[in-house]
Length: 225
Ligand SMILES: N[C@@H](CCC(=O)N[C@@H](CS)C(=O)NCC(=O)O)C(=O)O
Image (tube, rainbow, N blue to C red; front, top):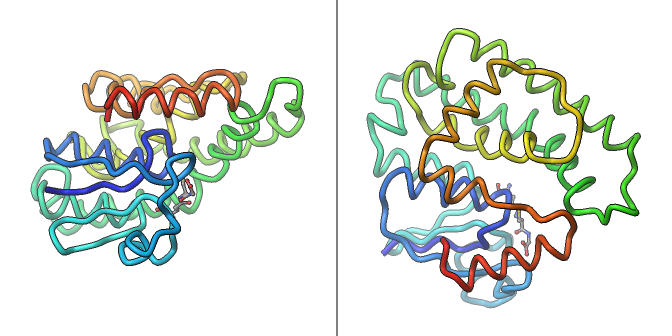
């Protein structure tokens, strides 16, 4: 059976778990990273020599880097659905997945760290506003792209929506004032109707780092994976 190594609240693991669930795959989540440890074992180094999460094992095949894993699972188990068959549509999916990593991920994750993962008394409003502006400036580009399409590649949900959908959930759910992004908001609302997104991406954050860690452990203990 497919093994996904990681923890259920990690920004880079969530896209992999969401993709596996969109594809209806049977998998086991091997809890690793953060308080679950295991990254420094020899067993894990054979799966991912970087000792980072996520990684997968699909039979004897091991793979790391979250977006490479989303692409692999989509190509192997979702040809024509998550993974577009048409080469140009596939290239557009790749383009936005690369863009998610190069332009959108970091400002949103730093915004997330500066809010949810910083104790309220230690938060820096100027830094939070600057990160919000940087994230918004990136998402304006996605907003223009989504003006005349329902999903990143057009009419259908594909692998390209997965990393960006994870970023969007973080962005829209941190405590900060946000300028409007009407097309991104409408697309986010469409994603929010998907059961796998609701279950694996739309998880509560808590309001501080302690709550965050406790939520992750509770989620793992309950097997909500
Ligand atoms: N570019 C890598 C980044 C992997 C990464 O930074 N993983 C973090 C978690 S989000 C990690 O392994 N941190 C150590 C830990 O969680 O214990 C990917 O997308 O897979």
